[in-house]
Image 1 (tube, rainbow, N blue to C red):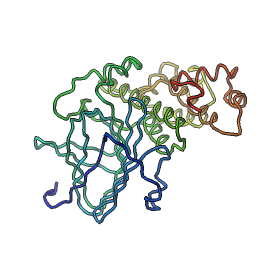
Image 2 (image 1 turned 90 degrees about the vertical axis):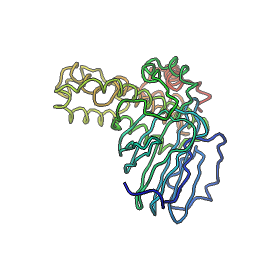
Image 3 (image 1 turned 120 degrees about the vertical axis):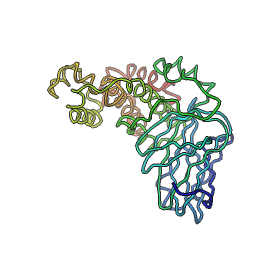
Image 4 (image 1 turned 30 degrees about the horizontal axis):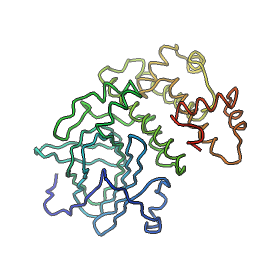
Length: 331
């Protein structure tokens, strides 16, 4: 790697105590299409780089999205004023983090990691003409017990030791699987505002932690040969379920459609996407129903009928359970 001695240092806030919101009028036209209406943002533009950072607090989760373009060689200085755990997703290109002990860590494109980050600055060189999108969900270590109580499947991941120095929690990096990518794209394209955005994005953050926890746990087990052999089948099934969110199938029905046994289909899908078929169908069903709920021209009865619920009462109960709020709050 080239020397960082003559590179411009650029502070990158990855957490902040006081979150300011700037008016969109201060943002150049080319960056306005990237704006997420519900977020606050920070923008800097000079001869060295453009940095657009967007942020929203949703319950125990602090979501940050950084679009960074380096015009010259720079050194990013990610900064947090306090101790955080950060679930990080890297897009568009790769970067190398310089650790304080002289070693390095690669932030590879399309990979994700959970970091234990102590307060202070970190150093990430970035070469000219490089563009990255960095997405991370921060949690305060003090909120871990509450998350584990609410989502017991997070216990193994979040009960890992928290050293006094910044470090990686997972043993090795994981690829961003299609389910995680879908959730991130849903947040990046979220047009909800106010409480509608709050509860939707909060659930997406929780699902990303749940997906990563499953991925990290399963990483210790090799993929079955049948899962590798039929990878295209599982991708086709994933795409089918995304395109038809209101079609709820039984596993035997899907197995018949894709010429596999129910056991093979269930295990293969879970190994590739770190979520069960039933869990993913429910996720897509709830997202789509949530979207219909916020179309002004539709009544609750219309939404329930379109979503194929037996009644409005059943629909409301499922939405409230999934998004952990009342119907009034999410509206």
